Length: 92
Image 1: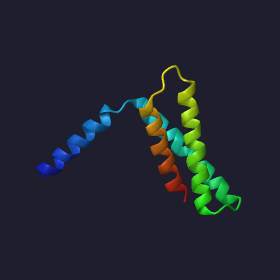
Image 2: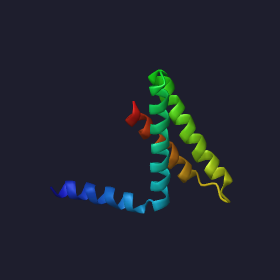
Image 3: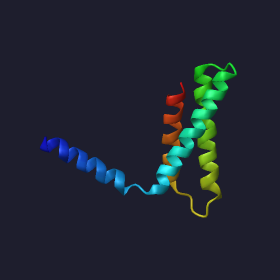
Image 4: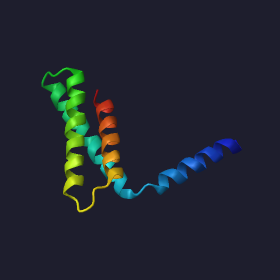
């Protein structure tokens, strides 16, 4: 039981160290990727093509947002891409 508490404590401290901004990037791109993948699949696209469309659109929006910011933050872009991957997985 102590080992489980130790593992949970380490995980909780790592999650708390992530800035709130990264969670917003993750969730926004997850929702975008999910919506694009579901819409393209609803219009008859194959699942692979729908997944690719969701990934590309969400990642491109994340990249564009970072590109227009004053400072390009690779951690935000990483959160965008992780969110896009999860969004596609949830959609398919």
